[in-house]
Length: 162
Image (tube, rainbow, N blue to C red; front, top):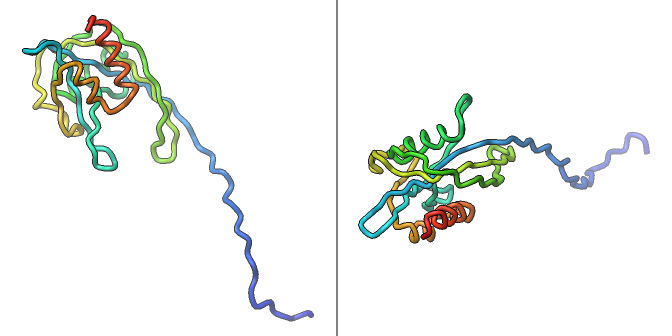
């Protein structure tokens, strides 16, 4: 059958080979910022808009920049994200989690500090935040959107005997 043409071919789909996923690590720092309100201790939470359009309430935090320690980063990020000046009272420990950004798996470690607000104004928060608000500590525990950050808030409350 030389010269015969095959009218069509049956193609069997073959799965694409697994794409190598690159990974990287990030270190961030943040704060549980407190003040004494009329009804007791209050915590500052910052809200970001999620990809789905919901508000996610969380603790202010951000990347530790080169040449910066976690304490400096936490103080800077609190000031930038919330508009508050705060002093570190004590360390609260680290949390870590994974997320994917632009196809890269990122392992993020966040070092948190218990902090006291000493000035500033939450209305002067960063544009990347939708809203920053003071909540009674117990309500802040309920409002925080992420389990790991609720755990940090619990540690803070326990350290205060609340």
